[in-house]
Image 1 (spheres, one colour):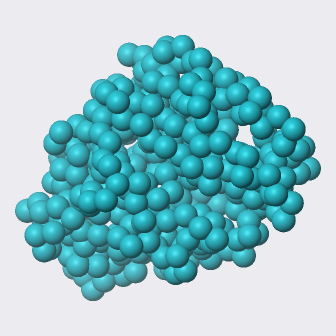
Image 2: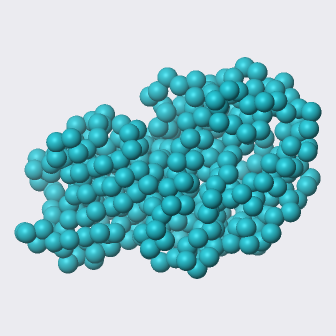
Image 3: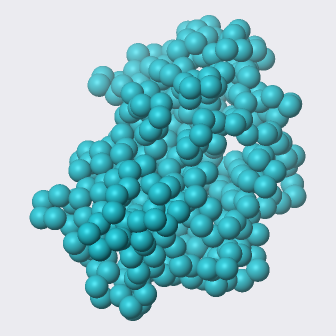
Length: 423
C-alpha cells in the first residue's frame, strides 16, 4: 500500500492594506514534501516517525528564552516573488514566524541545494531593505545594523541557523499579491535534507513576522487528505485557507476549545489536552502530565511541521500499556530496523480500537484506527505515534480528514471531521 504523495500551497488572498485580493481570503493548495520521492509506504511512515523524533528532541533541548521553532516540515508552498516575478517554494510551518528564502547573495558553500534558482533581489524592482530601527527588524530573534543602516538577522532552529538581511518584497499567490517583510538568507547552516529542496520557509505562528500576522488575517484553517492512497480520493490535495476563506462547513459536529496562553515570544498554538480514551477505556493520566509551565516547559501544541503525534512518557506509557492489553494476542514484533513500537498483522488491523483526545470544555477529537495506525508492508501494520520528552505535539498523521480552524480573534481552535478532498 502506498502513501498519498501530494499536498502544494497556492494562496488566494487576505484583507490587509498591503494585500490585493478578493473578499474571500486566500486559499493554498498543499504539496507533501515526499511527493517528488519514490518512497515505499514503509519508507514514508518511517521518515515521518524519524522527522517527528528529530523535531521533539530539538524542541526539548531548546533554550526556554529562545524556543526552537522549525526543524522539519511537511508541506510546500509555491509562489512568485519580486518584479518581474521569480519562482520560489517554501515549507509551511505553524510552529515558526519568519518568512525567508535563500538569496543569490549566499556565500559560497554556505547555503543548501534547492530545486529552483536562488532569488535575486538585485533583479527585482520591488525589493526594499528594511532599516534596522523598524519594528519588524527588532522582532527577529537576533538583529543588528549593517553599515548602510539596513537590518540583518539571525534565526536559530533545531535544524541549524539562518542569517541574512531583512527586506520587503511583493509575493504573488494564486489569487492575490502581498507586500511582505521577509528574510533574504545569505548563510544557511542546517541539517542535510531539512529544506527538502525548497527555497525557504513561511511561518504561520503567532509572532508579528508570520504570514498570518503580516496580512492582518484573524483566522486560518487547513485540512489534510489521507496519507494512504487506499483511504484517499485520487489526485486530491490538502488545503490551507487564510482570512475570510477560512471557515468550517456544515455536516459533522464542530468542536471548539480556547488556546492556552504560552510564554512570551513563543509561536506555538497550545491546546488544553486533558485526557485520552482507547476503545472504551479512559487512560489514567495525571492532569499535570499535559500541563504547560510558566517557563515554557511541558504543554501540548498542534504543529503542522510535525508528521506524527508525540506524547510525553507520562501519557505514552499508559497508552502503550492499554493498547497492549486490548490487542493482546494480535501484536507481532515490529519489522527489523523499522523503529516502530506496537504492530499487528495486516489481517488483524480491524482489532485496533479508535482513540479519543479529550480537551477541556468538552471538545473530543475522535481518531479512527487509520489516523494512528498504518501498514508498513504487506504483512505488518504499526502504530504511528511516538513518545517525547518535555512536551507533547499533535502532528499531521492524526489530523487526516480533520478540518482545523484557528480563530485568532477569539483565541480559539475549532475542528470537525471532513472529507478534505472535497474542500
